Image (cartoon, rainbow, N blue to C red; front, side):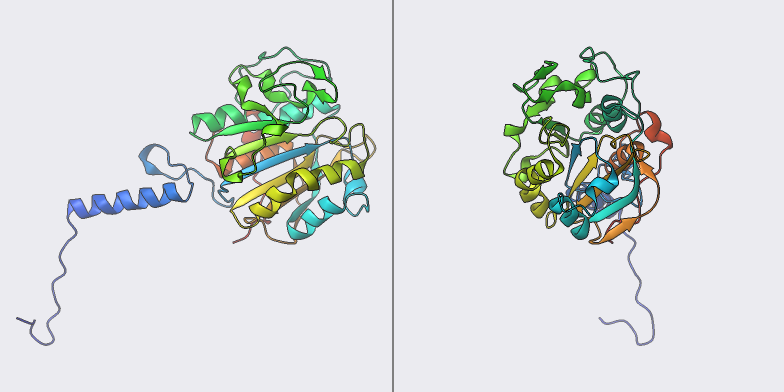
Length: 301
């Protein structure tokens, strides 16, 4: 029998079973979106930063911002800048090279002040890899000219461990450091976050800007193109400048979550890059990243 005209129908109250099913569906949707949920099901990714499916960080060497951005010797990095975003006030922390790698990875130099060969596994301090693992996310590094996966040798040909801080931590499995030959062609199989370390020639340390720029195009260009349509990000940054420009360096971000042509003039450094990656995946914060701000103003809505 139809209800009487003018009399509102009575809405049934949702049952406990209905509410439980709804909460479960919301949780599954969050998981499908790649957002890690902690205790109580609260999404842990920070507001204002995206949650990419994959982030790849490539670290180049010893060149100032002005030697890269606008340089005819670096057409590929400048193409990434045009199609992605550039941090125009990006700075390294210190000199020489090695302490900067530790700051980018763990938020502190861990007492490293030079480029000497550190003792493998000397620190148990929190770092990006240990934080990602604790949050149920995957981590890995791809190291050009590394003799074999997990090798802790100090040097081998153009390979130098001083650019690989992950070997300094007892809470990071050495096996998570792969050779660059193991960098996948199926990018869906990449870890959630990975670092790429070119060798001493390919990173512009011993060879020219043009050599390093071409290496990036030939070895990470296909990933960058893929990232643009697969919710992923490529970050290209430098460990330090050439000692002549106040440690101002080029930092370029590219991928689908990044606004094409985006620019930020906010002063950022390695701690901000680390903090941003941590907050993408809801991890804790290592060292000085705890007091650093996220990189903002360059993310696509």
